[in-house]
Picture 1 (spheres, rainbow, N blue to C red):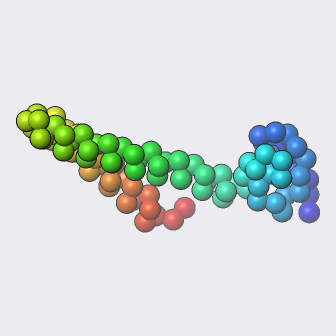
Picture 2 (cartoon, rainbow, N blue to C red):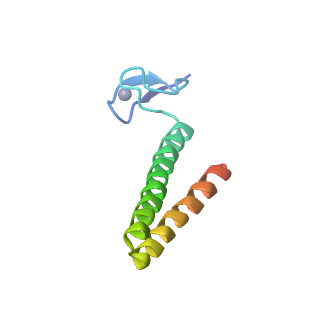
Length: 89
Ligand SMILES: [Zn+2]
């Protein structure tokens, strides 16, 4: 058992803990990776929904060029999302 400093608040804590007891900041690398992975998934999920939503809207309004472009953005985001979900770190 060793003492480590929390990168977020500087509180001294034992390295067995997964999260800092004071500010709840993840202390282990796998926890940090999980956190950034979730942020990435959220971002691409949002891009996917917005892209396809905007594409549908443009299609209804008759802007087929825009609909194509935005549809591509949505599909690319979906592909990245699936890739991220299926690969293990
Ligand atoms: Zn802390």
